[in-house]
Image 1 (cartoon, rainbow, N blue to C red):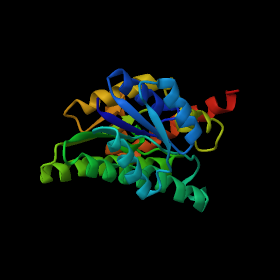
Image 2 (cartoon, rainbow, N blue to C red; image 1 turned 90 degrees about the horizontal axis):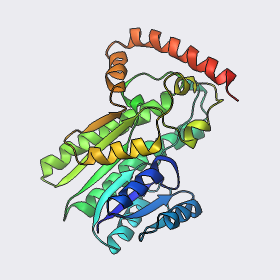
Image 3 (cartoon, one colour; image 1 turned 90 degrees about the vertical axis):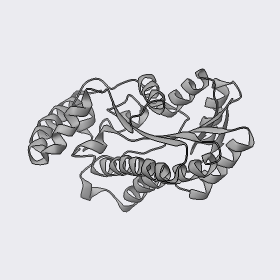
Amino acid sequence: MTIAVVTGAARGIGFALAEQLVERGHRVLLTDLDGDAARAAADALGHGCWAMTQDVRDLEGHRAVAAAACDRGQLGIWVNNAGVLFAGDAWTHPDTQVETILDVNVRGVIGGSRAAVDAMIPAGGRILNIASISALTPVPGLALYAATKAAVLSFTTSLQGDLDHAGHDIRVRALCPDVVGTRMVSDVSHDAGAAMLFSGPKPIGTAEVAKAGLDLLDSRQLFRVVPRWRGPVARGAAVAPALGLKGLRLMRAIGDRRQATSP
């Protein structure tokens, strides 16, 4: 039985990933800034799962998590899922939000990946980084979030190139889901700038996202958009950003109306 690590696993996508990893025969170490919630999630999963409190901004903390995983078996999968989201015009965010979103969404993924690679070099393994469809297209109102997820996607594909060059049997992938029905999204349902999150189809479920992510680890694709049909739409806006932004203004107006009428 191999060990899997999932960060930000107390709820949402992280918990769904941990749950499906257990179903696929892995023993999972769940980490989260909310250690009590992570331990409750691990207890709910059973099957030898356990939890640690982790702030993904702490680079040394990733190495401690990797060591704890290796103490109980072979570390085969590491999922960098922990993330934060702030909405609003890009120049209005306080310094603390800029620092937090960069540290959690970018520093956390880089730190987790580095720790995972170091632990996996002897026997190989797989790393999944949770990016976003926003990595592929302009997202007015979510500029900070989009920038960090674009960094995650770029880091992931570049890291795979480094691993291939070094001859290490480690596979790294990035999942780019559209809006997911999680608390991270619902918490900003009335925030200025979050309209784009509510301008499209109904948010997708965490189970669907988790399955897509684990399936991606078994594929030769470097990254995947969920649902897949949204990929060409997002990339289309990125090909001609000036035209894309005009269309996105219409979508943002739809989101604004939905926010205004939501309970």
